[in-house]
View 1: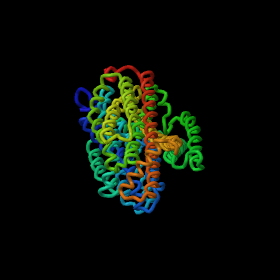
View 2: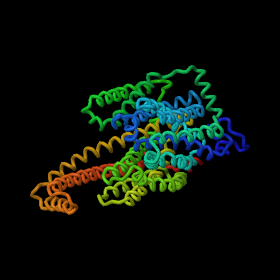
View 3: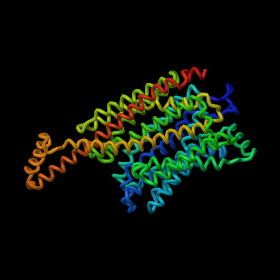
View 4: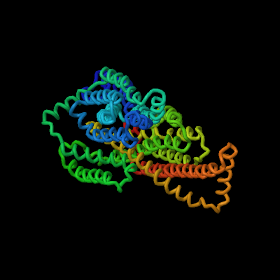
Length: 536
């Protein structure tokens, strides 16, 4: 029975619940199916880029637009999805997004060339970007405030676990079948989701009345606001995704998109604040809990997506792991997070949310500090356990942040709040990936220069290592002259690997500091009451 029903058992006509007279937990499971599919797709394609480029006669740099195009389209649709949901109807809009995502996924798998694949990825991003805000709005409206942590814990399984298994699944499918299957698998999942949503999810009467009233008043579309937010987030996504590849602001390409994004933001803020019916309600940031939760979600997005992409790169670049094996190193963390998620949900209903967030951030910070102790001799178990240490803390951050973001908001604002909190998570993920990649590249160069400066012919250690490598090769039958040259090449390779390892350690250290700094922010800015106290 819906938590918003009357004591007589009849549905409350003013209820905003998506469950109607069905069990709300069943609805929570149903809408999490498409979430898992969509979030999985943000990370599953990363490991297949080289294969995509090879099969379509494109360079690896050109193939990265497969990722960028999806991120840009998703970024554009996310902030306006709350408004679109209110105009089209929440259930109708959500099912449309799932259908677009599913069909475009299959088209991606069938794409005959890179240009068509990028086009279909844009469509996929449009569908995927609108799904999460609708789902979270449904959960926020279906469950009372004291039950939301448990509901978002169930939803968080899809949001947090999917990125951890994405690289593993993508690597396995690419290695054993073909890259096309990373898109084909969305087809049956999407069909199942559509059938279950059509059958089990209800469009509340009060939402339909609000939609009709909005249309009856005359539909005033804030086209200028839409264009400005699309330019701001779309261009920003291109800058973040292509910045390191194009050498940031030394590139005219990056400078152009950065300027368009910046100017669009400057125009967008005053325009939206002065509209009666803005396409993005920036006044929501006037609620302290929502504004703080948005900043925290931005941070956790940067940490989750940044490190999820970073660890497989480290394992493949330094330790020569295969795509599948590097992905498997993340798997134990996903299972650990799966087990901890219900605990975080139960505690979220009893403990003030800010204490859970602070605990989670501190634990993430300590886990990332532990990652700075890695060495060239670190084995698979080190990374598997380190990932477990990090991911068990994430539910204690994601669940309460998502719950806190709706605290104190008017019920009719949940859709728009969902859009903006998802913008924060996705934008944080893009920033985290971009900054991590940049720090690795810049730090690696700095560490390599430092190490090379200390490799002088007069060094006894250097001479000893060269002699040892040359003697080992000579013993294997390599001619002395070639052995000497190979020994120098070996030392150069060792220096590069050491520099790369030190660069990754730098990133882990920065992430640790970021997480530890955010812990007191949560304590200072979020309310002290527990959801259960609020609910009663």
